[in-house]
Image (cartoon, rainbow, N blue to C red; front, side, top):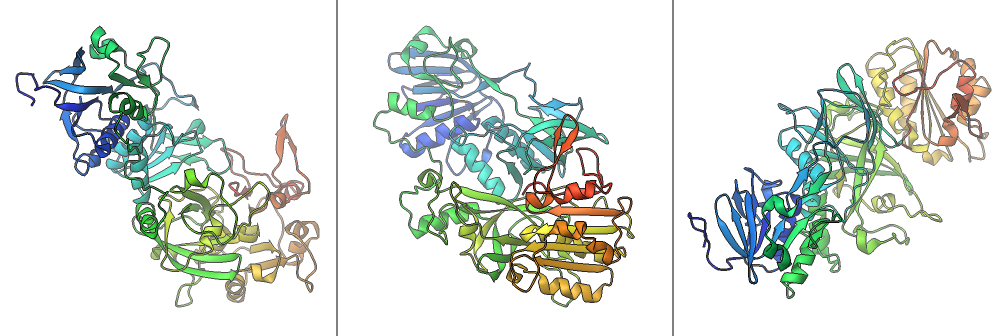
Length: 588
């Protein structure tokens, strides 16, 4: 046993792990669950990366211990620290160096609110963006969330096979508790200053520009060298001392990337060990109801309270979160998710289902509005701890097997679901500051969802200028909110609702573009004046018609979209950092 004098009895440990980071914790926990009797973690600081694992997994951690030397005596590895000496069958060096000269690969302004690896002080209640796709980024995210920050992790390029089970488990837990928003495919392309705060621009349509109180970049890390831990020649030649990290040309032969180095340690030092690397994940080879219930309990954090089909392929549903706020700004969107383990309404087969079976499918949807409360007044969504969504079933097609909506189609009130922790989006009524201005809301299909919330917001705040909501659909049955909109037109003389079904025999086929071409708005007494009109567009890209810039000249797509028609009349499209009078929801 360990003594105060710095000696230990013979081979008291199966494995000693130097480093309580995500990779080290994963190997330690998985080794214990796989049958090793004694595993010791040496952590130089006062806390491991994920303290919640210590108690439930009965981890043996030595805090404040720095490794000074690693030697070999026959088949035994001797690890000496500043406090004790350990004798073990194998040793893993999980610690790695931070790179002091590393710089973020993002065009950015200089700002005291942009940090590398360092968490700012007093961040309780602040908005923090963590940028990175490794366990190190997860560790920073966990630390910031524990300090009370509202955290977004931009993890574009994250590789689930390289992320440790401990890191993956922690992200699931934070998502379930709605304490972290994960952007799995998004990374910043530019950071500017907006009134002293970082404004972050992303290189994809699904993520809007976002402003934060602070940004923390998780730098890349470098594998330790043998001399960093005092590894002797005998220890090196033993083949029982392992280094976690990317192998370099002159690295130790037992260096391996990713937490799965534990598999290599097990194969070399413990050949009889059935190494369990899942760290609490269920074995999806046994897909009984108990396993599915466990997965739902682990991932889902909200309940479906309302599910009303407009037709078999179109639904309005409401979701109530277990934790956190349901507040939003009209026009913003949130994310919903279901597991691949859920049944589908169709017979399509998901690609690589065996590998993805216990994962979540997440999609973003604009937040709609019930429009009226139970007493018949305009709904005040802030008083209701629910979010309403308007969703259409996406059928499978050649090359595309949708994952979420065919599963969502089988859900009913009382069923559990995943709800993302943070709503987002800059497609809001912020530019509409004059209550006398004209507001035009053009949509296709479920693209009218954000407009429903916008209309109620405008009317509740006393907007008295003309408000027009037009939506193009195939049939009357594709209009889930028709009754509510007609009620609004009866109550408010300045509100006009124009439903435009294109496949009904008794209705002439017309599209949103025709409202502008044929002067329909002028016949309603509405002047298309760029100085006093704001136009909001959400839905089919062909209806919108966003141009591409070719040598500073706008090149419009075919067929002609609304943007081109309005541009010919003097309207201008929103551009990055410049708000104009044509506003587009681009994450479609």
